[in-house]
Image (cartoon, rainbow, N blue to C red):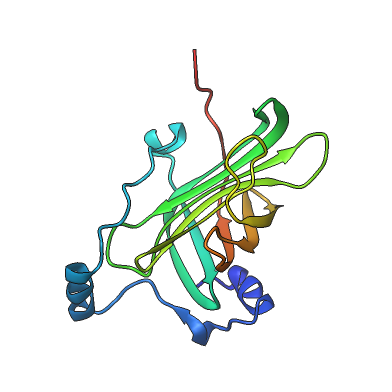
Length: 189
């Protein structure tokens, strides 16, 4: 874990001792692969990920009081001028997928910050172990669970944080620390 993620973990009462490291021993991984369902398919890569613009990032997730952490390569993007269901907003997006036998396998997070004010709107999917937790608070879409989100810029990077309750009632806290944030590429025609 990077020390920059440590305050997030400590703020929510889970120390490093309670976090699970991503890699598992080979014997455990073999047992898990026989018993665990296959992870969900990886999301379609964003335009920047398709160009190979992956960046180092770290993720800390706390689901039902159990902490998970990982570091790897993923995508972090921002669009200052976007919209969601007709509402002008800035867009922040982070994704990480590790299909191997790790505890924290997948994170897909989008935060919309309405230009006119009001709370951030979130879509979040996190897979830890064999469970997937979802939060969706986008007005005009299907609401699943509840949560609040923040974005903290630091130099070229950012930390995207969500604190909430997943659709199944599980308490969920996630922080994605991006070393660099790219711009969302234009899409459409």
